[in-house]
Amino acid sequence: MRNKRYMKKGIAALLATAIMAGLVTGCGSDSGADSKSDASSQQEEGSAAQNGSAANDGSVAQDSGEESSGGAYADYSNGFPDTVTIQIPVYDRAFEGWNVTDNYYTRWIQSEFGDKYNIKVEYVAIGRSTEVQDYMQLIAAKNAPDIIMHYDMPQAVSYYGEGAMQTLDLDEIAYYAPTYYGKLKDTIEKYGTLNGENIFFFAERDAIYYNDVTLIRQDWLDAVGADMPTNRQELEDVARKWKEAGLGTIGETLKVKSFTYEYPFFDDSISEEEYAQYLDLNVAPFTWKPTEDYLRTLNTEYNEGILDPEFYLRTDDAAWKAAFVSGNVGTMTFFISSSTDAISSLIANDSEAKVAAMDPGAKGTTGNGYYYEYPPYGMIMGINTETTDEERAAVWMFLDWMIQPENLFYLQNGVEGETYTLDADGLAILDSEYSGEAKLSQNNNKDYWCIVQEIAHYDDEEQDYKYQLSTLAPAGYEYLIEQSYGYAEENEQFGIITPIFTKQVESSGEYATDLNALWQEASTACITCAPEEFDAIYQEYCTEYLDAGYQAILDEKAGYYSEGSYISD
Image (tube, rainbow, N blue to C red; front, top):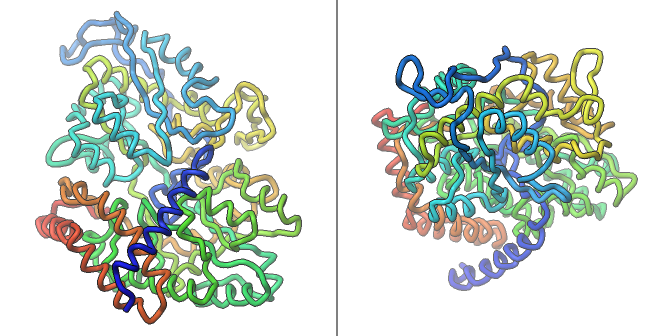
């Protein structure tokens, strides 16, 4: 067996190179989430449409600054006596020419909402690829925004574990945000409790899965006379033909967050208890059999030369996209949107290139498209412990204003006749060529409205699908959504929801950072070692991983599962 100290030096060098590459590619680009290999991010990069719920003017009680008739809460419906400033986080994805904290829409929000209630709405930029680091620094300095948010429950719990979130009064939310609370009441009551306290509130989610697309080079399939692969063995057979023809390889990244890489290697023998112990977006389940199968598969492909040999340099979607558009790899997984330049950049480099949506079953050994099924909520949020009573009331009022259909529609679509037009069915069709002042951000302004809604919708499945055909794919590539929609329908039964614990898994917060670093070293070592060394290296790292805190996490989760301190759906 290869000496472990030698292995670590070699892997450290690989990872150091990967980190430097990430620093270069990360600036000015969106790191994104790892597809269903990146759940969380999961539908993190969704689409824009409108909400069709009943309207409400968003006002609360009557007389400014006085207690309500019930005496419990002050009435600010006519505005606060003195200006109240609320700080709202917004992801800074470094879109060229876009000021994330000061633009047409932030000024519109101030004019339409803030000025009405004597509230100053300040946006705080949070780096998308440096999100956790940014929040932790702000929390440590007691300077975090009034809303502390994340897409994944384990990380939201970690922020809570830092003492960063207040206990919530649900009646207060209902008073200041009646429309918002009416929509999210059941979700907040079911999922918002931690350690017996009301901690979290949420954005609503009407989940779709057909925006999570793996592109495959259709022209390469045609060139080697191959059909669309439907399982991993068929994908590997295709890649061997690509290699023989002098084409590219299977695309891959080094997983550094939102760990769902193992889903394609599930089968129907896995119990709910196993899922409860091992599924964790923050901590890779290194010692679990599906991970071993994943690593062993990639090890075989790497040594055969059919896997991207520089996968460990690609730690985000931007790096994977660069490999895809340059023709080095023939597959790429991402959340597609009409504003993506992945396809246009590919065509610019190769005018004969053609793409298709790959069958998700091709990622796994069984051919079944197991995937991360989203819980029935979007963004997970808490109120900063430093936030005052008045600021907290203003935040609830802000949520209630934003969730009104007319306000959501404006944020999601912009100005009629400029940024969009209405078609014969009343659906908003965005103008991708518009470049004026009211231009939406590249993710259709989602980073502003994600605090109330995860996937914009019409409350009608048929209308939603018609809208997504024009919104999720660039013009001329609507067929990608049609293909992906068909795959999502075929694989609907294979969604797995991660059990949510109602108590804080303290060991996860304690060991997650160290385990993440060890995972990157260990997974790279296992994938790049010689096939005959795999078993010994994997077992050695399993022992080290368990000793580094993973055993404590498994034991704590097992205890909570046994006592019933979890929600399974």
